[in-house]
Amino acid sequence: MSRAALVLTWCLGAPAVAAVPGLTLRWSAPAGCPTPTQVEDAVERQLSGAKAEPPLTVTGRVAPSGDGRWQVELRNALGGERTLTGATCTAVSAAAVVVVALMVDPLAVAEVPVLDAPPPVRFSLGLWASADTHSVPALTPGLGLTVGLRWPVGLGLELQGQGFLPQSTMTTPGATLTLVTGAVAARWDFALGPFFLAPVVALEAGGLRGRSFGLSDPAVNTAPWLAGRAGLALGFVWRWLRVGLRAEALVPITRPRFTAGGVGELATPGVVGGRGAFTVELLFPPRDGPPGRN
Image (cartoon, rainbow, N blue to C red; front, side, top):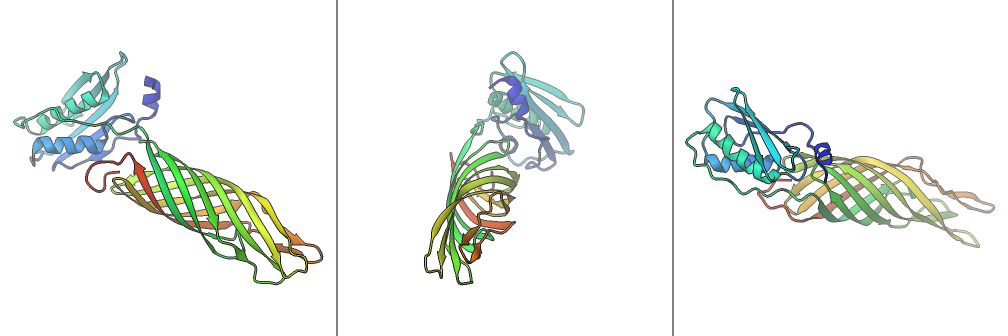
C-alpha cells in the first residue's frame, strides 16, 4: 500500500483515551497500526497503577516519514515535544508508549512493550432471523445468511441471502407470494465501547413467486424483484462474536403485479416496506483482549 493510501485511511479525529488517571492520550494512526486502545493499555501496564500528577494531555500522531520508515510526533500540554522514528508503525508506537509512560512518571520501569497491529481486514459469517412487511400480503418471517468484510476504519461490505415464508392474501380468489432475495450491503460502524451503531444501505435482487388460488385454473408465476434498503444496525461485539438488531426501510424498484383474467389484480407489493432482523455473526480472526474491545 502506498504512503498516500495510508494517509487517506487515517482514523477521523484523534480518539481520547484515559485509562491512566490524570492522563488524556490522543492517538492518531493509519489503519493497520496499533489502535488507540492498544496504546492506552500498554501505557497503563508500564505505569502499574501510577497516575498523572498534575494532569497531563499527550497527543501522538503516527505517519510514514517519507523515506520508507515511520515516525511518531509526541506533544504534551506542557510544551514538550518528541519525534521518534522506526522501521515499522508498530515499532514507533511501542517506543511512544515508553516515552508517554516516562512523561507521566520519570521513575517508571519502562520496557519496550509488545504491540500487535490489528489485522487489516476481518471476515464475518452470520445467521439472520428476519421479518418483512409489505413485500408480501402479510408480515412474514424469514431466515438468511451473510458473509462480510470489515476494515479497521469501520467500513464494511456484506453479501446477504434471505428467504421468506409464503403468505396469502385474505381474499378469494387471491394469491400466495414467496420472496427469495440476495443483496449487497455497505455499512459504517461507529464503536461505542463494546457496542456499535452502523448506518446500512443495500441493494437487493431476487424473485417474487406468486401462486393463485380460488380459481378454476390456478397459475404460478415468478417475477424479478429489485429493491433498495436503508437503515441502522446496532448491537455489541465481544471478541469473535457480534450480536445485533437491524431495522431498515425498503423501497421496491420493481413492483410485480399478480393478476388473473376476469378477476384483475390479486396481489402487489407495497410502495414502501420494512425489514427487521436479529443477527448473530462470527468474526475472523478472533480479536484477543478483554470484553468490550471492538
